[in-house]
Length: 212
Image (cartoon, rainbow, N blue to C red; front, side, top):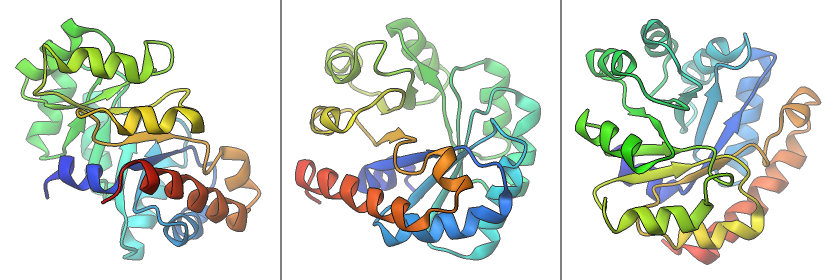
C-alpha cells in the first residue's frame, strides 16, 4: 500500500479517543456512512488497542491507524492489534527503528525545519505536523515546502472548518486530522447519527476544496 497516496485520496483522518472498545465498530460504521474511510485511534485511553483490534477484526473497509505512539515498546502491540500505520506527536530513533523492524508505517511528529530534516534523514518522508494551529497552520506547510519539498504532512491540532480549504491547497498535504467529527463525548453517548452528519458535512467541504 502506498500510504501517502491513500491518505491523500482520503484527505481526512478523524482522531479518536475512545473509552469503551465496544463502541469501536458502530463508530467506524457511522464514519463510513459519512464518507470517511480512515480512522486513527489514539493510545490516550486504555481502550485504544482493544478498539483497534475490534475494527480490524470487523472486516470493515477502513484504513486503521494508531495514534499517540510514543515508545518503541508499544509498536508490536499495535501491530498485533491490527494497526496499519502509526502516528506519533514526535520522533525518536528508537521509535523509528521499532516501526521499521515491524514494517509499520510511521508518521513522526515535527514542528521545526530541523525536526523535519532529522525525520527525513531517518527515512521518513510522510510526517505529522502537530500542533498545527499553534505553529502556523497552512502557512507553515507552504513555507516548509520550498526548502524541503520531499516531505509531506498530516497536520492535526486545532484545525477549524474555515481552515480546511487553506490546508487542502498545500501541495505537501497528505491529509489532515481532527477530533471534531467524532468527539470523545459523542462516542460515549453513542450518537452515531450526529457523527455521520458531521462526517458528511466535513467531507462535502473536502470534496469542494480538493476534487478527486
